[in-house]
Image (spheres, rainbow, N blue to C red):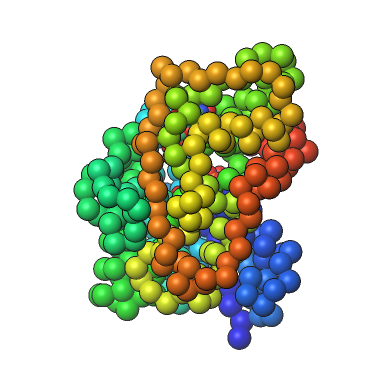
Length: 323
Ligand code: NAP
Ligand code: GDP
């Protein structure tokens, strides 16, 4: 049976990883199947904040399935600076993609939430039932509220129109094709770039905050496989957390150590404790995922950091480094 899978945000960290798995994985479960056409969109194909752009894209490709990744995305410091942009851009993008998918009769949409949208004051581990149980952390409330609405929209589209719209909740993602901006990026690519410059220029390597916050990191190519599994096999409207287990949570200092080793930086590094730590932790349970797919093999954190840093060094001249 033929299908057209449209990936919004196809040029980003997660979109590029899905493209990589679809092209390179030979397994029945994750590799490209006969009859499938995969379309990876960038913002050059249209600005999804604009309804007419969304409509033109759907008219052109007539997708049967959508993986919806496009979003205004950034690390802690960017989220703190642009709260209204994170709220409005993401509300508009999500509304356009979901409504256009409904109008064009798309058979299934998988959208992307994030563990940073969970309530700030909560019990741990966090699970899928707790998204709406209290305000998100102050640092990213714009992004968090826009993302939470996807879950509300999915439920409403399902109950009123029978649409098969669902969502996944990844923890912190990293890998090739990340955004390596020094200031507006996520911690792993941001520190990779800073550590590289410190090594090149013989300057101090400075990590923001205390290094004590805890995060669960998922390698983008592992996440990509789980996205493909969700599209093909997951049947619920309710979201599913896509994460390594609680025992694989690491501190920001562990992240800095892994980067220092992968970059081969031999100097000392220090913490700038005047900078925000953000949320201390957002430990999530992957029990639901493991019930569905108990034999899934996550790439060990240090191996994935080595691969990502190697990709950054090989692609230094062309990778995303800023505005
Ligand atoms: P990314 O690397 O910043 O990529 C964002 C993608 O969205 C790019 O393809 C970009 O296109 C596209 N885009 C942005 N604004 C657009 C617009 N107005 N119209 C059309 N396309 C637009 O982000 P990512 O890290 O891959 O994130 C993918 C998804 O995962 C997002 O929904 C994000 O919220 C979620 N997520 C990410 C993380 C993480 O740690 N990175 C964690 C949890 C969840 P251009 O390349 O053309 O600009
Ligand atoms: P978050 O998980 O949504 O908070 O996203 P980030 O990827 O931005 O991680 C933020 C954590 O990393 C906070 O504890 C920051 O203090 C810490 N951190 C240390 N250095 C950096 C840096 O250079 N960039 C970013 N984004 N965070 C950093």
